[in-house]
Amino acid sequence: MSLLTEFYKGIYKENPVFRLALGLCPTLAVSSSIINAIGMGAATTFVLVCSNTIVALLMFLFNKFLSEEGRKSINKIRIPVFIVVIASFVTIVEMVMAAYFPALSESLGIFIPLIVVNCIILGRAEGFASKNSILPSMMDGLGMGVGFTLALSAIAFLRELLGSGQLIGQTIIGGGFKPVLLMVLPPGAFLVIGIYLGFFNWLDSHRKQS
Amino acid sequence: MNSNIFRLSVILAIVTTVAAFVLAEIYSITKPRIEMQKQAKTQQALNFVLPNAKYIEPVNKKIPIKDGKGNVLYEKEEVLYYIGYADEQKKEVTGYAFKAFGSGYSSIIETMVGIDTLGKIRKIKIIYQQETPGLGANCVNSEEFNGKKWSIEQFSGKTIEELKVDKDGGPIVSITGATITSRAITNSIKQKLEKLLPVIQKNTMGG
Image 1 (tube, each protein chain N blue to C red):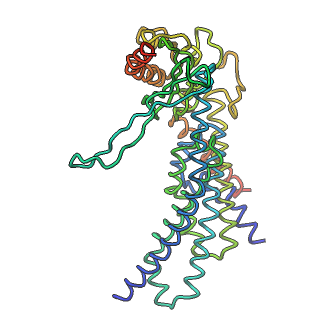
Image 2 (cartoon, rainbow over the protein chains, first blue to last red):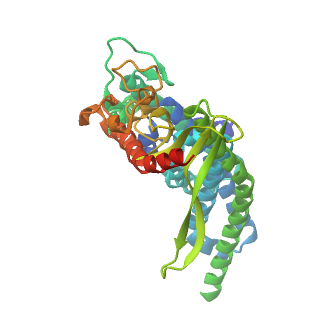
Image 3 (cartoon, rainbow over the protein chains, first blue to last red):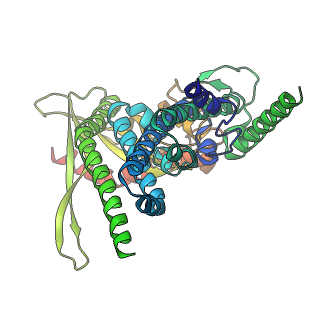
């Protein structure tokens, strides 16, 4: 039961973008088309699951083999260790993508290295994985990743539809429709994220009342 | 205190060493494939811009890489342009191809350009771009050119003098809302062509 809860909380209750407002910079950058959103979401999910698992495993090993004093001192270097783990996985994703999925790596290009500084990942490593055991940490990473992907796709859906009249590269609204160029530019991302955040807050307060 | 610092260093060293080994291993696995993908992409673009070439050969230039004192450290090979031959015996030249790089709105746009022996553009293909989706990213559009909307097809048959976007008074129809991108592509082709034309003319005369 608890494992599923760890998974589901990332999708709605603690959705990284809409509820925790984490990782907004990549959200702004790659939510201009659905393809990019899904690719970025998948890459982030992979890194999140791997880094959460390894961080939980490392913490488990540290707790098992180090003395009380050692555990205290390890706290001082836990952030550098997390960053090494995260950066390694991001580099792996980048190389594997370039080798086996050239089309995807081309369209995501510069955004992949940015996953390193995506605060969702360090946030979950520090806030969840370092305090929990391996399986829940994996589920937490998976849930957060899926939640991030869904949030990115939801934003990209509106931006791509209004900004270029297309969905997944296919023209949906043709004819007399004049695309709202603002939507594919960064200000459009702010507007759409703001509207979604407001909507989810409203939904939440509504649920609490009833 | 001292033993504490020692312990922290050892733990950090172990973690980073393991990470370095894993990365090195994956790098050595993926490197040949990444190279292969790059070459396949270049080859594909070359075949596209020089459709009737049977054999395409790169012309390299050695660029000496120097250190601060002017000593040559090593020589780097760079492809200047490609020669397209009509037959595999390399007798008849049918055209040339080259890569042009232009700074667009949010990326360096890489274009493969094919020209005939007189320097007229045959076909172009955008190999790399990271322009704004919905705006500059439309530069890859390859629909049949209708005289109103940007398409890479409109470059076919253009001479060096005609490489100018409409905003600058030329015949190239720019992308709606992305003049910077259109200008970057057009001007980068023009600049590279200006440098190559004398070389190509010399080749044609000599051969």
